Length: 490
Length: 142
Image (cartoon, rainbow over all chains, first blue to last red; front, side, top):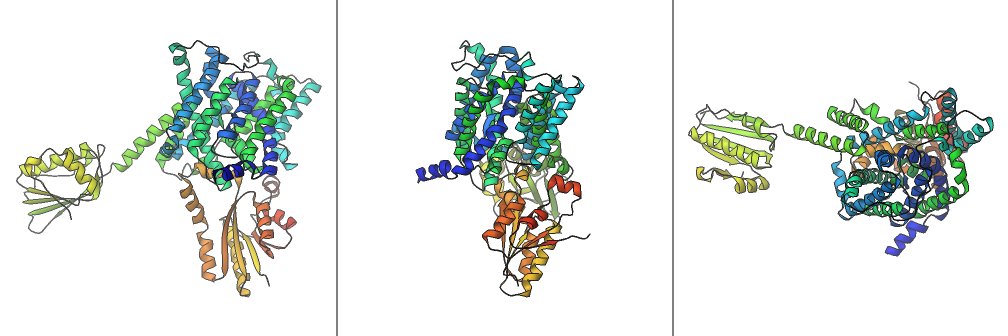
């Protein structure tokens, strides 16, 4: 049974998988190079990472047909580390990222994904698009006229070439065309090889050359933690998208563990940390990819292309890569969120916008996500902390019944307590809890206090309609047993 | 006259008009089967998933869009089926028509201007060009 399923995941769609894998490999090249440049490393680091991420995740991932490689979200998080500490620390960070992800996967992180509100996820992708765009600005604003022209030409090819054929990825066609053109016409633009900050050393295939001590851990841990969270976030989002596109399910915890294993091996292989890519996975499914074979073919064919095209990479004009990255931004940004900004609840829009602002301000996707989750939690608490207390007095004014509606917990007790007036001289007071739930000790304490106050006024108090959980909590935490409150169930 | 009609549905008013045409034709001859197919464009999947909390909620949201079609088919008491598929709209509609041996495809026209037609591509004209069976393009006059 298990073998049959695995067999289908690998060889259920051989022709489609091989073709789509080749298309993805071609589409990956420009992005892997551009993301390397964002991270500040040699393009080979991103290309090797894309090769090893794809090959490893094809085998150990939980979502067949999903493409993992070097990504913008991850590249943006490692910029400072690379600048301050260098490539060897990046490899160590990549390995640690993998270890953390493997751990999260074993602990069943997928279960916690539901706590991340969609407005935070929308903010996440929008912020990602903005950050990728901002990273391009130094490469094309205010350099020279020909830079703008090459960026424009690249974008024109990217968006117009698909009208001719969709068989070959347009970004690659654009890169090739623009590179050849700028070489023959000697256009005055910077090339990948001109970037001073890029380390031209080939990645090593060894254990990272760093001191193994606490200081190293202090350097790499914060980055690794951010990378592992952002990597899983984007990977599990991508998995859900591929699930929906293919009408199939996937094992999200297995995917998390797979991402971990892939990053560990990628780190040892001299690559930068990566994760699943929405854009490339969509290309894969659209091109007919359905099985694990498609991801494997993408990785292997990419390696083949690296070997063939290796020397050409340095000749690619920077504005061509900028063009590709602008396309990635446009594809990443969730444009429908702009339209729904006024249609969804205001608190959702605020969370989305604050998430974006937090990311752009800190240049750290994980901080933005954290702030977004926190803010939406606060909004949620505020929303459900509304309680209503309805007072009904019978004709003789001797019996008052209060009906409480809403959730009773720390955030709602103040409003709850302020809803009672004790000046009435009633013999009998009944508190009806049918439409409420008592959640914590603040709520119990508040009920205690109210009961006591009524007793002081000489009223006898009955609590009715408490549900099972609320009753249990009240029994456990209540302090005024001596006051003999009548708890009845109606 | 027609035994099996495939009607393209995307939730829009244009496609509702197309569905109404399918119903009128189906009523002419008892036993006519109508299949409403909704093709979910791959390009829109990302936004759909992002804007929903979980797959079940997404499914019911998509189902809701089809409700008025279901109601219309039910009210006309004709044989019908509603199908949801992922892919590129034009090829998917054609494939489905071929697989189910439909003898008529009914599709609404979005009324794009010439520029939009170049950029977005007109689904109805592509279907009309490549279909092996008859095609009815329903124009929406507002």
